Length: 245
Image: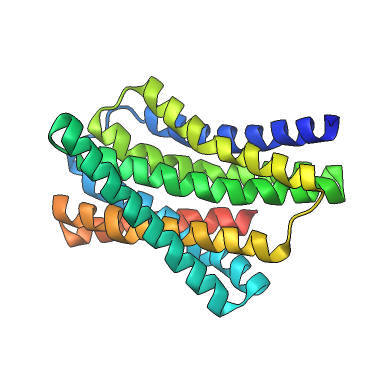
C-alpha cells in the first residue's frame, strides 16, 4: 500500500510540477504583446508536433506496430474533435459565443492530460521494476512536461486569463499522471500494448490540436511567415527536450 501511495505522489509531482512550471514560465514573460500572438501560437503547435513526431509516436510504433499505432492515433484525434464540438455547443448555449483562444487552451489541456495519463503508467511500471528507475523516469518526464505546459498556457495568457487560473489549469492537466502511476503500481505492471496504445491515442490528440487549432489560428491572426518562424522555433525546442532526455 505504501508503494502505491509513494508511486502516486511521484506521478503527481512529475505531472503537476512539469506542466505548472511551463505555465509559470509563460506567466513570467508578462503580458504578451498582440504582435507576438501569431508566432507564439505557432510556437506552441511546433512544440507539440515535435514531441509527437520524435518521441511519442515512435515509442508507440515500436511497441505495437505501425497499423495499430496509426489507427489508435486517429481515434485520439477524433475524440478531441468531438470534444471540441461538444464544448462549442455548450459554451454557445451558456454565454452565446465561443472564444477561440480559450477553446484552444482547453483542447491543448485535454490532449496533454491524456498524454500525462499514459506517461504516468510508464512511471508506475518503472517503479515496479526498480524504485531508482521509477524516480529517474519521473524526473525526465517532469522536464519533458515543461514545454507542454508552455503550449497550454500560451493561448490562455494571450487571452488575458489570470495567472492564478493558468497555474490551476496547468496543474489540473498534470493530475492524470498521478492516476496513471497509481493504476500501474496497483496492478504491478502494464501491458506493453496498452501502454503503446495510450501513447498513440494521446499522440493523435496532441497532433490534432496542433495542426487543426494552433497553427491555423496563428496564420489567420498574422501571416504565414510569422507563423512559420514560430512553428520552427517550437519544433526545435521540442526536439532539444526529446534529445536531452
